[in-house]
Image (cartoon, rainbow, N blue to C red; front, side, top):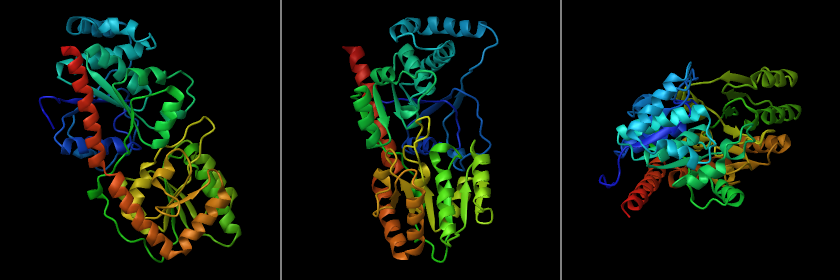
Length: 409
């Protein structure tokens, strides 16, 4: 890395840490392992009760940006600081279409001043919603470049308040997304030209591969209990299997707004003795569960509000440790779970097909071993966080270089 070109990178995140966003922690750790200085700006309070077990390894300082004000005085303090250190900061608001809320402006002023004081050369946000709104404004105010990673909800969800994704794509020095499916959608829908696909990756040293377990029939599912995860489809598939005389144990790890509905569905299906909702678990415990299970299923669907998964990290983790997987043909998942090659794919929202895939996987030891071996090879080749983070740093460096060349011209 050319240190004369590169400096500290500021990560702008809505909340940090978030239990479901292991990819952010993986990415930051990979940057730090390569010697890249990172600073984290968190825009909203932490809401989690569980955290990733590798969170303590992150060295990056976290600055929590104030998001609530009881009077106008703190906002004026930020305006005065910006006028003193960033004379053109307020001109940015008119130039960038006036789409920002007052809260966005106050937080962006705060991030911009801190970025300038700390010598930050580039801002990167995850998700094209509030974090990118702030990064876009703050980078323009501070006169530095910015980029963001678009995932899934931020691309496809029908938000009540417009997110102006087209403007963020237009103004970003670079945009990253996590699947080829997303790239094609952003290009077709928004005419986005500067979009690069970089898969989320894992630290493979933490995920040792082993052969799938023999003698187990346990089905494992992991994720937030929300509609897009498709756990209601899984429970219906298990009910159909029960009707056919098959009652394998199933553990669903995670918490969320659908807990009561899923519990009622399990009770109505008469599956209380075999299907358990276990709540959230630390990552180490989830990985241990993967090593004991027969199959992991991730029956993702497109939610009624358009929300959907991109590439669930739990699929990467299961495939890395050797657990065979079943998922659905939603968004970019088939880029990872290649049917009958690295896993099995069932059509979205099709419990009959899912039940058949589950029984096939449980019953066929040779299939499980073949898929497990191929899956690990794919993870090593395309989903290694060391390579993913290096590709990101190349994008950051190119953005910084273009900005400096433009200023020098």
